[in-house]
Amino acid sequence: MSLVTLAQLVVALWVALGYLLFALCWLNIPVLIVFICHRISQLRDREFHLRPTAPTHAALHFACAVLFGIALPTFYFLSVRTRHELALWYLGPDTNSLWTILIGVACMLWLAAHLLEAALRLGRLHFGPSPVNRIFAALGLALCLWFQWHTVKAAFISRSMSPFSGGNISLPELWIFRIIYPQSCFLGTTLVFGLALIESLRRRPVPPGRRRWAIALPLAATLVLVLFAPLWLSIPRVTHRQAIALIESHRGEILGTAHSADLDPRLLAGIIYVAHTRDHPRFTGDLLEELTLALWESVYGNPFGFGGSGAPLLNASAGLCQIRPTTVMETIFPITGQSFWPGRMAAFPRPPHSDAHVSRVRTRCHALLPAIERANQTGEIRTLLLVPKSNLAAAAILLCNFSEQWREAGFPIDDRPEILATLFNIGYQRSHPHGAPRANDFGRRVAEFMESEECRALFPETEGSP
Image (tube, rainbow, N blue to C red; front, side, top):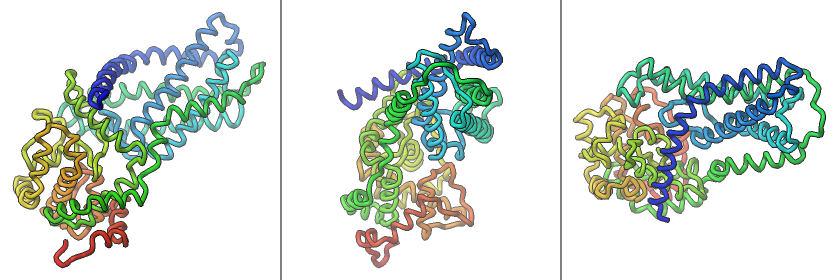
């Protein structure tokens, strides 16, 4: 099966699941109402387990714990990781971190152990009054509340980021598509952990019968490891030696591109080095890049018009300089006047460059335009991003855009490679020229590599170099 065929099958499944998820996100509201009524009744009535309907309620509790406590957080963590958006949903820059993922996975492991233990003894879920149960239930509830507070706050902050209205998002759209619709899903996770905490705080005797933790805990650990395999397989990054070898193999292209755009070749080399050693998975990165870009193209060609809304899920960095598809579209369209998908560029907010700015960048980078245009003739984003020459050309044009933007505003940064690298990392939407810019972690690492012995050996300073 070819990569393109696989991508088309994945997109068809994705579209079907998207409609199913959309329906479930509204249907879960009555489910959650029944669930919370059941749990409150269970917590208030000591003889609840003697009711004729107890098995039905136990099955509902078990199903909600699996769906909202395990399946939904797994989907969320694998989709978002430490990024700031989930499809159309802007989550805010402080919502996700390695700490939130670590705490979330630990709480899921605790809940999975309870689910498997209950299944092994063919009984109902029980969260006894132990310190362990209280700690993990409290951590899960705190993480859910943290998430919901930050995402609701981000929804109001991002009112101007509407993909539907093209301007300020309306209040009905804000409440429906940014708050009620997505929050209703994750409210179930909050209820699962919150009600588990309430149960663990009530000092009730442990139900009779032997608990099967010796079997449940290893099974739960195995389950979580399998569910998060895509995440932990991506943790090993490209090594220092591999990144140096990559730069060495493309040294000539880096030098040529930098010379054509009047850039320091060490800046391009530093971006390549940091992007790969900091963010690029060592074992699965190249394969995932190719599949993601094939999915991107299939998404834009599907008959459901899924491109604008599906793009952020696939908007992963790719290629030698690790550039996002949306970034490269925003970069090449104003300069070349060409688009991989004519008529679709409205989905991408173009940088507000003046005609004079575009003319200066086009003049400065005119030697790089043929590589971009040749890649554009194929109509495939994969060609532009995965071919080193066109990827380097796009990265150089991107850097020139930032350089000209800040010079035009009266704050030249050509001698500040750490700032140019920072802007390369954070994108057009966060580039606001001012007199006191500060480098982020990416920019600082790039500047540090530029001064390293390996970089200076590969790209020695010559007279007249930038």
